[in-house]
Structure formats: C-alpha cells, structure tokens
Length: 442
Image 1 (cartoon, rainbow, N blue to C red):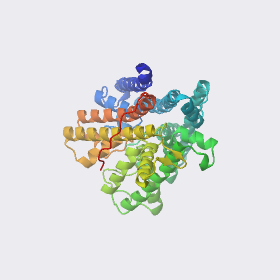
Image 2 (spheres, rainbow, N blue to C red):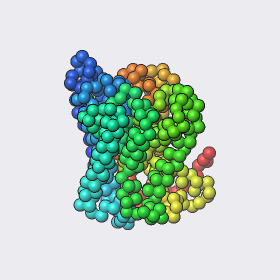
Image 3 (cartoon, rainbow, N blue to C red):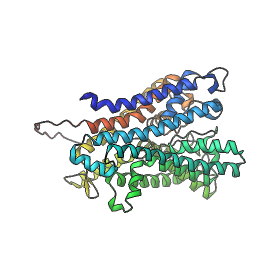
Image 4 (tube, rainbow, N blue to C red):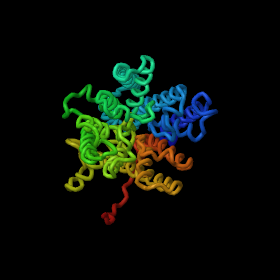
C-alpha cells in the first residue's frame, strides 16, 4: 500500500533528477562552453537544474558563456522540464482521481474531462499538442519581428524566435541576450508576445480546457474560478503597484515614454509570476516593488501548468477560508460550492511548507554569503517559485550558496506537485473519532 501511495512521487523526483544529471553532463562537455576547456561542474549543475526546473536563474551570462550547442542543451532541458511537468501532472491527477472513491472520482472526472484511462492518454496528447502549437505560433511571430524590425538574418531570427518562445511558454525566462529582455523594453510587440506566452503557459491546462468547453462563468469549476479571477487580481495589483512605485524611478522606467512605461509595467506584473524575463534591472527597483514581487513570485501561477510558486488556487482558496471564518460561516466556500476540509488542510500544508523552505534557504544563504537580507530573500523566493528573476546576486554567491538555490529550485518545482499528490492520495479512514479539544488561537 505504501508503494502505491508514494510511487507517483518517486516517478516525478526520478524524472527530474535524471534530466538534471543528463543536462549537467552535457553542459560540462567542452563543446558546450566558450571557456577554454569545459565549464565548471557547479556552473553546469546550476544551469541544468535551472533549465530543467524552468527557472531561468544563472550564475553566468547565458548568452556569452555557452556555445550554440550549450544553448541547444538548455532549450531541450527547458522543453523537457515544461512538457514533463504538464504531462506528469496530468497523469498524477488521474491517479489521484482513481483513489477518491466512486463519488469523488465521478466529480473529478467531470471537472478534468477524463472519463477513462484511454481518454486520459488522449488528453495528455492534446495537452502536448496545445503547448507545442502555442510555442510554434509564438516562435513564428517572434522570428518575423526580429527579422524585420531588428535586422536579424533569417536563420538567426528563427533560432532566437524558437528559443524565446519555448522559454516564454514554459515560464523559464532564459534569453540569448546578455541584457535579458531589456533589449525589448521599447518594443510593445515583443513584450506583448512574451507576456501572452507566459500567461497562457502558466495558467494551466485544466483552466484552458474548461474555458473551451464551458463559456459561461456560472458553469466554471471552483478551480477555474480561483485561478482565473485570482490571476486577474494579481495582474491588476502588480500593474498598479509597478506603475506607482517605479514611475519616477530614474534607474528603471522614469526616462521612458508613457506608452513604454505602461508596457514595461505590464511586463513587471506578468513576468514575476514565475517567468523570469526582466525589462528593468531588479537590483535598482524600489524596495516597495521588490516587496510586491516577493508576494507575486511566491504565489506563482496556475496548477498543472508551467508556472511555479504555491499556485494561485492555493493562495485564494486559503483566502476564501479566512473570509468564511471571519464571517462565522459553518463551511468555507467559493461561490455556490463548499471547500472540503481535506482540501483546506492540503492548501495550508503546501503554503506553510513553502514558507518554511524559503525561510530555511534564506537563512542558509545569508549564513554562507553574508549578503543583505533583502536581496537574499528575493533570490531565494525566485529560486523556490522557479521564477528566475535576479537582483544580480546569484553570480556573486559562493558555490555553497548557489547549491542552496539549486536545492530550492528542485524542491520548488518537484516538491509542491509531489506533496500535493501525496496528500491527496493519503486518504486513510479511521473507524473511530477522537474527542475534540479547543486550544486558544490568536
């Protein structure tokens, strides 16, 4: 029975561990690095973990440190990590649904549209095609823009279009430019395409599938309502706060036109949701902006997608529980549906484990590097949430501190999914109830 419960979690961990290992070996080859000889093992490991966990953080300049072969390896790792997350999460959801009992299984299958194992397999194929089609469409548009607006040769424009498209849809944040997406700070077309790729890829396939089948909001499931409405709220909050705090900041957007300020603020609201692209130098943003990004990065995007963090649905589900408790309602609910107590406990567990990982990682990095807490907290949240944004601190950290970030990236990508699955599958029933006791809270 224990093997049944922890089997799926082992599959996920093994998949990512093997992928990181293969990626490290390939990036350690002399052909992958522009250095004389091969890349340092710690650099190869960090980059492989960052790409596989679709984070985007790097201790070196990705554009100049790696050769075209190295860039191709990074791209393949990003693709493997992104599609691996989506397909494995689809399979894990199917396994979870199969252990919920008859009534729970029927309800879950109705929401996930997985009636039979054969249907589940066909759903995985549809999911992969959906993401690949999105990547191809975005690659074509980006390639055309780079060719005609930036004068790139056809081959170079196509390669950069593919790399940026895969990176955007998988919420990785890697680019082939030393300055990152700052190159496109004055180009609303490219910024719009990157934001769309990040948002669509990070929302999660369950939401998109349901939106295709159920057009009316009253027909949406609780998960879709939490994810969609929550994403809109977080986007609006990120946009307004970025505009307000950075409008007069000469180190970020103060020198830009009004149109560019708005578009860069849109990027500043979308990219911290686990994408990792940056159109400004986050080392020079105002403390208020950095604090808002702490929250946006930690929450992340939608479940069963390419985003990281504790997930939008987890955060707003806990918010609904708090509101119901404040109102004194006997059941926590979202719209006309009550939230099961087991789901509330799962959400609380995922959120608190996330807080614990970030705090432990931050303390470890500060102890090793003695860097300012504000910057260390930014890097650790970015690593755990697999966002990939950096305040230019990663490259300055000693190897031991970088390994802490590697662990956070791996835990943030693999841990939240496996913990959530394990909690959902561990449904042992007692044949008795313990007497209740009410401790003092608050």
